[in-house]
Image (cartoon, rainbow, N blue to C red; front, side):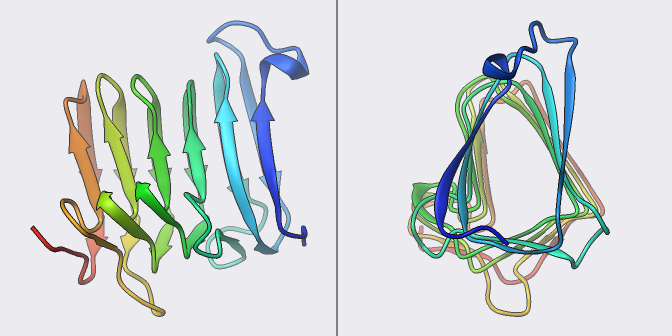
Amino acid sequence: VVEETDVEVDAEAEGTQGFNQQIVHVVDDGTWYENVTVSLSGELTIQSEQGQGHVFVDAQQNGSAFEVQSGNVTLYALNVLNGSADNGGGVYCLPGVALKLWDCNFDSCVANYAGGAVFASDGGTLIVENTVFGGPNGQCTAESQGGDVYVQSLESATFTDASFNGGRAEE
């Protein structure tokens, strides 16, 4: 378990070049008190070592749990909770990002404007598979739009076996 800290995953600093490179980062079981920033030109998968229900990324209401600045990113079998930001309390994607959420749970994530759990816009892609929004501890909310997910001007957005449990937006 990692102490409260900001973690930056910078694949180029680790020597990967080009979009054809793929990095898989396996996360140990436990609760991670993190705000993770991802910036890369390739592909990155962040996944639980043991599968769903073993890894919790708790942003402690101190910003987005994940800020994806660039690249092609997959979050696999993670429980994301207590994110709180202007947009995308759980995951905030900058324009052009390709994001895949697979077998994840989002719980008690809040946005002051849009996308309580996920904010994705402007030319990126979003694929959501077997993912639950609104867990046992609380729903995801936004003050304006997209209590669970806010999507605008993406190249594509696909939802398969996604569950939305009580997310709400004020407008």
